[in-house]
Length: 156
Image (cartoon, rainbow, N blue to C red; front, side, top):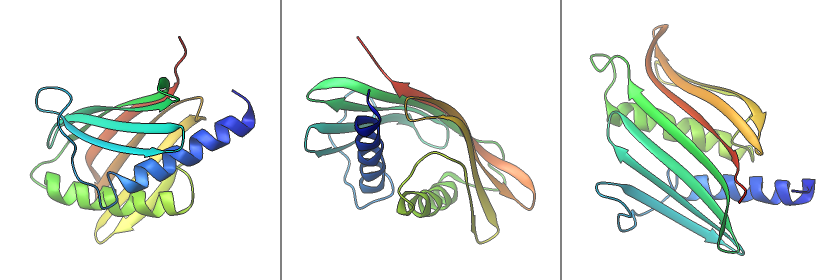
């Protein structure tokens, strides 16, 4: 993909992520048994984030361009210390932290954000075409939540 197209794709991904998980979204009908699905569309792009689970969860984001798969990301998140943080608190920290990241117009490139006594950290390598990373939350210096992700362009 040309740089201009990659820039448009990345801008769309940021808008889609901001409008769904961290935005005022409503869950769509489930596409798989037990899945939680979020959708967003703009112009020739469409986005689907579909995940299963709760405090420990696995999901995939898919962007289509003109109806064909163009980009995808897989993720798996889990509580490391459910005695110190629950799924609701982890979700609140993640949403606030990602909202700040998306406000910067990006979803990659690393990010650290403090919410009360919790510190959200994201680190990754690569770019929108191919990347992998990890996000985590620490409380009083101890890692209490973690999520691994990877993704990039998909081609037929």
